[in-house]
Image 1 (cartoon, rainbow, N blue to C red):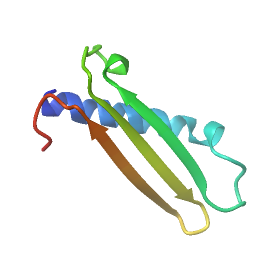
Image 2: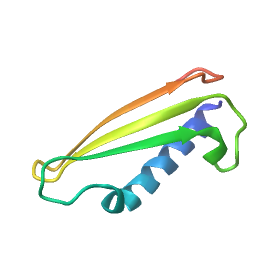
Image 3: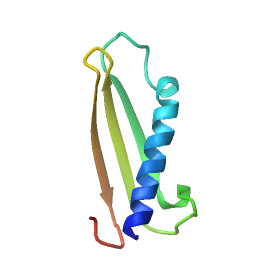
Length: 81
């Protein structure tokens, strides 16, 4: 997968996540909200047929104004840069 494609896919996933965060996350004010997103090549624009997968886990702390994240991936066909 080319670098620009990977960056575009991650940017699109992040933007979608931010728009849907309030719907997916738990009630505000009751601690941290945890969000988990599965990343697949088929969901890229344009679609990419690949065996690569990924997962993005976010922890949103409204009180502290922070977002912690963990991005994992496997079976990429190119170098990560």
